[in-house]
Length: 302
Image 1 (spheres, rainbow, N blue to C red):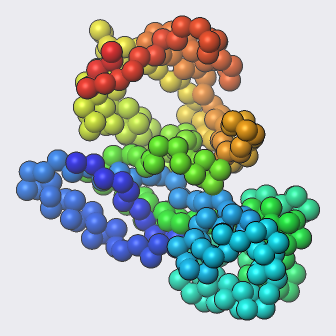
Image 2: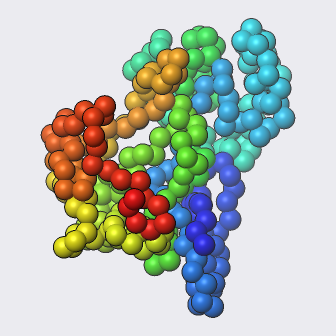
């Protein structure tokens, strides 16, 4: 059994002790169970706007707001009653810790504020962080976006999770929330942050976790190793430069809908089944033509 996700603290969920969760998994393994908690190496960040405050919709106040018109939302956010409620929630309530790590991710009227913490900007302007966020949102017709850590923001706890022998890398709900989060770059983040910068994992251990470990856990019997008679699926990268960009918003989905993407660096080439698929940041095969990949089903490629 594999379950998702074993997350560290530093967010809004008020998660329990990771030590307790790891101990329970280890106890199950000692009894003979095959249990693999899934762990992600990145903070679980959600981008939100006050136009679509998805991340707060667990609260009754925001459920009502989400069902309101644009004009009604603006009136609510500009009212003293809501400002008092929001200030209490993000500065004194259970969201206080996560709010101190919340960044401005997109601001049309002041792009120089992007990637800065809202608490720092508020301090410079002599405002509470709650009022500062609402003022920025109202000035840009609620389009300003903020990035808030839901969980996994405590890197010291994440480091403990990554070193546990029972875990497997992973966290997915199959592409949901594409406009609010993107962790498709977790593999390059693992190699840059946890291998090169923090030195938590050796390069060999990280590559194992990204390849053979996943194949073993999920029963993909012909992947994960470079061996004779196995498919040649290879990613060639430079360990000194491999990494990922900050998240970027693009509008390339049907109807012009938006999503978040991250771009890799230090990836020299991608080979699938012995065919060179991508090199020097350029696709070498047409997506409309034959491709070398195969659907994996029941542990092998069909």
